[in-house]
Image (tube, rainbow, N blue to C red; front, side, top):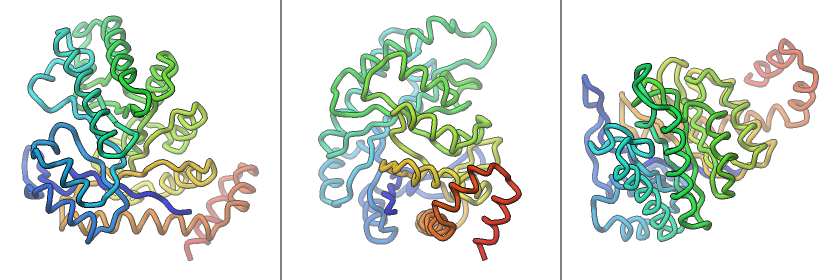
Length: 318
């Protein structure tokens, strides 16, 4: 099974927290060269508006020859989003969020992809009695519907996350996100499942993937890892290897052919090395699934005896 690996442009750029700067800024041209010639990924995920600060962005991306898996629309980091984007109390701000998503859809079409992804991380609340939940949800529905209706040829993939930037994000888990998609009923509206986000929501990632796929809403997959308490954007399988294996089992089982993008950041070493290792680990995990055998895994799954399943899986690692 051949996967399509996409690299987020931001993972090769400046990376810092409130204590340290781990990676320096790198130009768009440098990052595109690294992805094409060194990492040798199949495509890129590009962020609007940050990656479009250079007026040559569209030209440079097309010149690189790298397919664009999705345009990631960022409605969280600019100061105007401080009180929310799609759910901001100010109507003008909400309209700007819709306009951002519509612009991202137009850029996606120009760059030859049919996907935008968006994680509304600034929409939610921090305290009890801080937000009017009824109004917030209505504003979210109105905003997402208006944006996704902009053009039917571009899919809008919503990424959920339990918290950050809000203590409680409005799209916090796969259930809420599926509910929103089904409520709005637009065929081009679906889900980006980030494995790290599923983990901190205490979901089983493969189950969340399967639910979204069963609804026809599983549009886009982010692979990474963490220890289920914070979104550390670690190398896939470095903590929860069996979850990675199970997600890829369902990717194969359901013949899911979407893009896999990597939300993985390097605090040590060069990000190129980290991303090369990431792709290698995922490809090797697919090889392990092939070694175990789809029929054998189906048999073990039907048996439902964990002891037998894990004895066989661990033996397959030898």
